[in-house]
Image (cartoon, rainbow over all chains, first blue to last red; front, side, top):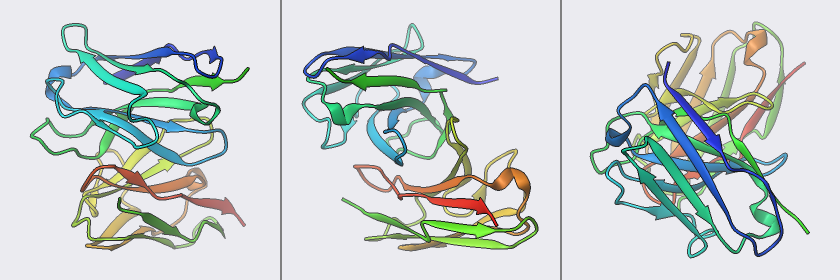
Length: 123
Length: 107
């Protein structure tokens, strides 16, 4: 069964930093674009960032641009989200998600999602 | 940015009902439109991709249609397990955007 497992969520003070990880199993990780999506408590889904299969084609939501960095280590089947300058409105469950089709320069539907990791930004 | 607007925001329905909800894009997204179901405390699950293609393993009572700016998701016969929140998403251009969701509640 294809699986994504996030980790790294925590309680952090405003202005702090955190790194989220998402480890993939049972699919050829390097072939697929990956994304981060977040959901604030009681709110809808918000796309955060995406990265192409080889690690290029990084994209960011305006709300996190300049503060968050997406990366991947294909040798470890792991996706990362480095978060700096965290604010209260970054408080959310963060999901990693896999694109449905092998990366060809276009991004597609997210067919596999992790279970989510909670990031709380509060003093 | 492409804004995605879903309607209604919520609806009450009974088991066995036919339910249709809509998603409108602020500009054309061709057929790069996908539908997800999310239950409380769970990750979203893709139901329909590319506007009208049924994801493997998803019951055939779910169907999607549309292209350009107007899309619909239909549940032909509502089942107890279908009470959830449904989101549309466009992957036509960045930033990727989701609709605000339609919550389907038990009447």
